[in-house]
Image (cartoon, rainbow, N blue to C red):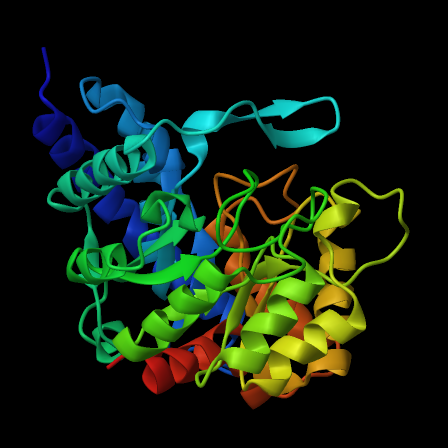
Length: 353
């Protein structure tokens, strides 16, 4: 039986040949007029690595495919996100929701399992594990920054942030779909009236350590409380401006006021290509709407790749097309570069110590 390392070596050897063609295609799409260094994805789940059973190497196929696409289009870096509440949530008729609460120490153990699986995969994958902003410029391979979606794994203990930082975690999304001790979500009834006392401890500690605070999935009041407290720019890694209330995943969209709260910290909002958008073209228009509200310096891309709901951008092979589409809508080369990665690079440089 083929081992995991043998499987990865065989697959990546094949992929490297395809990468050459991908780079040429990217250059043709650029037509010599724009060149983006570095491009960045604020939120992704390549191959849903957080859920992989390491005993079966064939299950790495989707992750291999996604990483190949990242490298073909020269993606500079991305936040590879673990999912803190993955064991206790599931999709239901009204969306994703928690099915139970974690048992004591269960969330931390699940975090450690996912972390080990991710790092084991990195040993054989064409990525550069990254912890500093200048890691974006060190290799042709994508720089993989680690993030955690949901602060559930902290289990109410702010001291665990020190270990998470030592583990290489550089961003934490305070809340996800399961209610936790840090603050309120967009998708459930509020219980903390915004950021909790523990959430405030976490924000202060993350500022001190030099970690990016991600307010995706957080309620407006939670995001505002974070913005009022933080002494660093904050990120909202994947969302979009609200439109009709009956759109799919409409609860995950944000108001203009919500977007401005993030921007006013000097922060960054990742435009989210979910099924909220009716098409790829509408997603491009929605990026421009976000720019109009938050400003060109405060918009990036957060694909939620391989973990998204009915995505209108479902492959990194579409990144060059996205850049071209934004330019065709009237943005300058410099403005497109900011959205595709320049703003993310600036955010990392401001926060990472």
